[in-house]
Amino acid sequence: MSSTERALVTGGAGFIGSHLVDELLDRGTEVVVYDNFSSGRRDFLPKGEIDLVEADLREADRVRAASEGCDLVVHCAADPDVRVGHKHAQRHFEENVATTQNVVEACRTTDAVDELLFMSTSTVYGEVEQFPTPEDYGPMKPISTYGASKLAGEAIVSGHAHTFDFDAIVYRFANILGPRLTHGVVYDFVHKLEDDPTTLEILGDGSQEKSYCHIDDMVDAVFALQAWEGRERAEIVNVGTESWTSVTDIADLVCEAMGLEDVDYEYTGGVEGGGGWKGDVKKMRLAIPTLEKLGWEPELTSDEAVRTTAEWMAEEVI
Ligand SMILES: NC(=O)c1ccc[n+]([C@@H]2O[C@H](COP(=O)([O-])OP(=O)(O)OC[C@H]3O[C@@H](n4cnc5c(N)ncnc54)[C@H](O)[C@@H]3O)[C@@H](O)[C@H]2O)c1
Figure 1 (cartoon, rainbow, N blue to C red):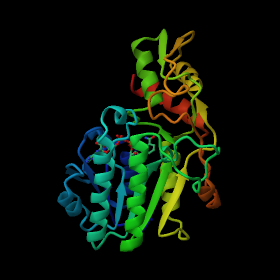
Figure 2: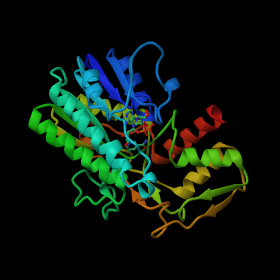
Figure 3: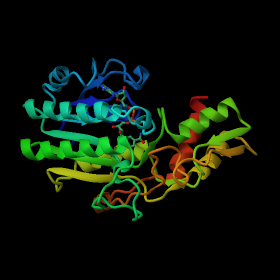
């Protein structure tokens, strides 16, 4: 919403959060970043243009204090690592559910806040039978503790928005890629190939197919949806590309971007029919009917998002 005066961005030092901070500043919005720097980075933050609260979202009083005077809360902070759930059963509940409760509680009790944007994920759908998957697909059966925690977060946001009269948008993102990427398959492949340019270990059987979306498209979609006046009290929206890329194709695109030929791919075979790890959804492609209704479409396809990100990493990071 272009009229936002002051926004609290949780996880604003992270990959997605820092890009949203940049866009909010460009729009003339004052920004408060709330981050514990567990995965966020100080060099992702603009110098001197923001108020920074270095704290954990588990500290409910500090979340509430930080939201004072903000009309918008953008909730990005989470532990987004699907893989940790298998080893640490409580982690996603504590990091993604309990913290979201603290954020909605701040929205409820702070007079100025009238809108909450919540960053969710395609992972909430689990393994589906319909591709591309629309927003009203169900029943939703997450197969990871991460997916479960984000679905719980969506429910908490929707319930509080309706009960306590603030607006909310839940964005279900495909896999997001682009500058400042700090995790995920493209990031892993580039770093593995940097260590050993002759061989690439690929988790799973390589046939996993998912949709990748460039961060610039994602940021554009976030604000296009926020500006939409016809939305519901708590709108739930898919954000992605309707194309997808297999893991083996990602390996090819990364090798090409790094100028590598004849790399030996070593597949681990994976778990449960070729997934990379326990809880890895093997196929994901989102329908974006709400965004299409608004005339929005991504600039880059899934393959293009992978290629440009791999090229950026090959140039900037290595
Ligand atoms: N990256 C993707 O492809 C993707 C896809 C779908 C959804 N999402 C969602 O988008 C959001 C951002 O993801 P990201 O990829 O930018 O992750 P990220 O790890 O780069 O960013 C998370 C940020 O939150 C901060 N943080 C984590 N726990 C915190 C806590 N308890 N208190 C304060 N700060 C805390 C971290 O330091 C970091 O800056 C997450 O909610 C994630 O679930 C990401």
